[in-house]
Image (cartoon, rainbow, N blue to C red; front, side, top):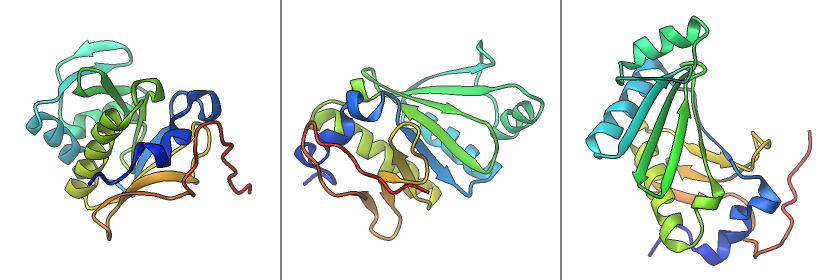
Length: 170
């Protein structure tokens, strides 16, 4: 049985309600965690493309990426777990792994399962939560890999299509 069922989450994946690019983050990371992520991408034989401030390059080490980010560059790693699903990792700082996914690519149970498998794999390898929030709503995750549960869980009430998501305000 899948971690999440499409009927329970399809409202979270509606780009008209939640924006196109939800925020996905792993907080409390280090250079070593970034290196684990790079090794994971390579070990899964996922397609990937690396660039530095828009210039294509060979994938380097996490330490080099962090040094480049500290110098004002923007290391970006585009990863395709399957050809139709893109995850874009941008290294702003070593202390968090930030990436985007496109909700338009994540429609239906099959594509949801691809995302869930990627989040679970990243979370398991890092031993950390991987949290996805609606675009522009960091700090209020909709779903994510729960380390204690060992799976991806829904963190808001299940909603159907067209339903509004009400999140707390600061």
